[in-house]
Image 1: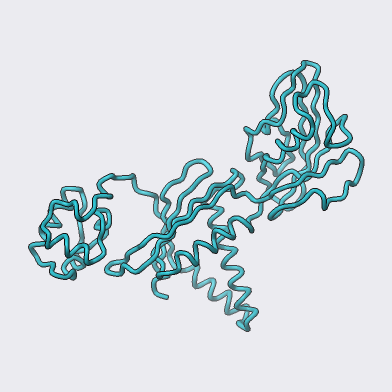
Image 2 (image 1 turned 90 degrees about the vertical axis):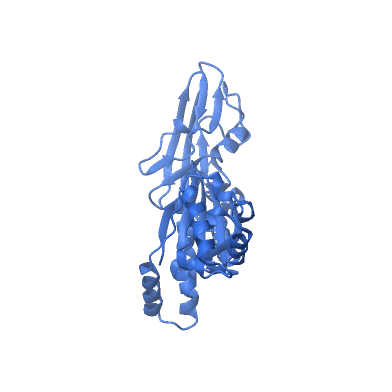
Length: 320
């Protein structure tokens, strides 16, 4: 499909662990096809890291209490489930908490093994209410995909407390499909995907990883249907050679939302623009002289009128 050669990923907004991205232009119908596939992969198939078991000094099971600690062990475990990590290998990491005296214990107080970083440092784990209080916890951090139920894990020794772990690094994904245009083609899709992560991966990298997984599975289907692995790899290499332009989002300009019907131009010019699928002033930013002259009933008079208006808004159209 020719339309696939011009796909651009535009960063509409990025702040903290949330990013909004537009993928366009796509053939009509492919907005939902691609968007839903990426959304499902984001939720189900990305690798993350979390705590899978703990050992607390002075506690034999998850219902224990600890002198000088406000929370019981069950509450501490619930707090630890919220702590996420970035790790550089598949190996399990042993981390620990060693807190003494009155104060608040946060995820940032976790002493991590080399190759591990706490991605959610502000999570409150416990409150020590006495100067003589001691909280010592050994944490096992592992990487995985999806959800692991602690009931399926054997307790290897007394004092080891297995924990449920949701490895998924994605907090929320929302998606919408809008109309896109390419020159005179208006029957195209643009898919908007907003990704919110837990901080262990950037939203941009999460979207990129989901696209890689989608490509990998597509290749496996092709091989299963008889296409050689070499040909699949060559096709993948060909895709990688197609230029994908990533644009920084432009600063929002309220004038972009001005509807064509509201512009101070003649009715003939408005009718011509609307017939071409232009709905707002922002839609005219990439228009060319040839695009305008190709519109129904659009002559030099209308052209000059529109060009003069666009110049007032700092939009200079080009001739092909």
